[in-house]
Length: 510
Ligand code: GAP
Image 1 (cartoon, rainbow, N blue to C red):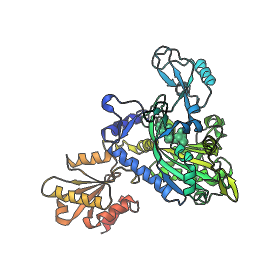
Image 2 (cartoon, rainbow, N blue to C red):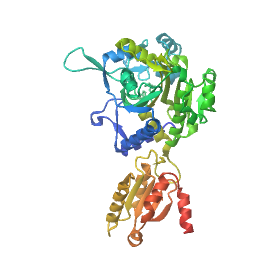
Image 3 (cartoon, helix red, strand yellow):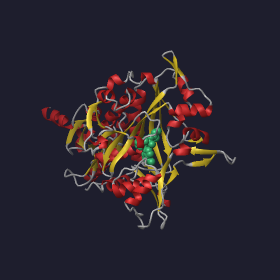
Image 4 (cartoon, rainbow, N blue to C red):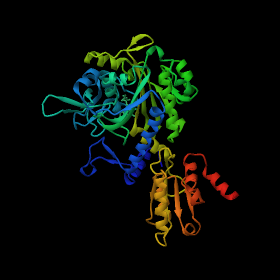
């Protein structure tokens, strides 16, 4: 398998096995819109639960809200999205195809042109003689294209609304309510999981650039004077992360630096402890989801890549077969958003902190669900000598289905025994799947293909001795276990308190 066709292989499994499919596929769909199928939905649920436990439920001062997707025009006038949430569009003069100007430049020259002015983009296109990829026609001058989706609210004309392009705005506009809920005590965080919409010029690369996507965001509000006295930071300060500094980007860099978040904050590579905390947690989270540490880093965003008000942004970028991709954005948005909405709505958002009035600053970790899911799919995908079919080496933390139960045959009471066992396992809280169709080898192959960790087979010995076999996905080895021990053994295996080798070893010794 070449790196180039990895994405095609993953798309193929995703379509065939119920992970992801195009929305409204029978009508040809529309670019940039996907539905999660049954397995994709289970995975997405696990990812969101993982994030929620780590970032929300484990913290006493972070709570989650669920805001509306459609917001009135006034919100986005104040936030600046209507004026400047745009990407540079370039059109072919002959065939009228449209492209994102910075993307077409990157494809043709390798130059990173994100954030450059229209004049700078036109100059690069001209100097490099870039033509239309479809018809080789001449390209027109670049122009800005606003990414907001608009609609009319209610029957009265002129009452415009917009689908939110990020979940964050719900939180800023209702800041007063949430501050009051938190008893006006800084720091506090408001988290949200939900859909965001961007009318991308050229959606591409499957789940990576789409027009409707899900984000998991937190707005962490704090007193700017306390930015480096953030108590949660103490728990993570020694976490080693991979980082790409501003200075490294002035030359060609090939390998990120490894340093503790404490050092990175002290050296001002990370703007403050609040962001340092989230960065450390993100690094730990991705590894627990099966993404190897050497494959991702936090890159300090250069001035032309960040808004003018930013106090420092670091994107989490991951190496994928399609190139390096941002999957999480960490932004120090200062007091910009609260200031803008305060002014436009004539509200007051100040809070008393340390006996003085402050307009809170905000650090925002913003994660894309689809991009993280795709990254997990890429890193867990396997084609190797261990078997003749492809498989996913998902960790239990993200595997859509953990366990499958198979009767060796459908006859002689084996199917009934296996069905009962499957229902018992479900009752005990395992995500179990029952399959009795086709040869057992085919069933193992189908289970591997969707990353099921353990297959339990009920055979004739099960009827006689109340034992079953457990097949380990990773080694394809099998162990026989008494039914009465099965739940404990599965628990220990899934919680990684027991390895399959240890289980086999224990059996030998008994
Ligand atoms: N509130 C800040 C914000 O939205 P962003 O860097 O524009 O920041 C955050 O987006 C994350 O949302 C990205 O890191 C990415 O994972 C995801 N995302 C953004 N645009 C996307 C798109 N068109 N398709 C898929 N995911 C996207």
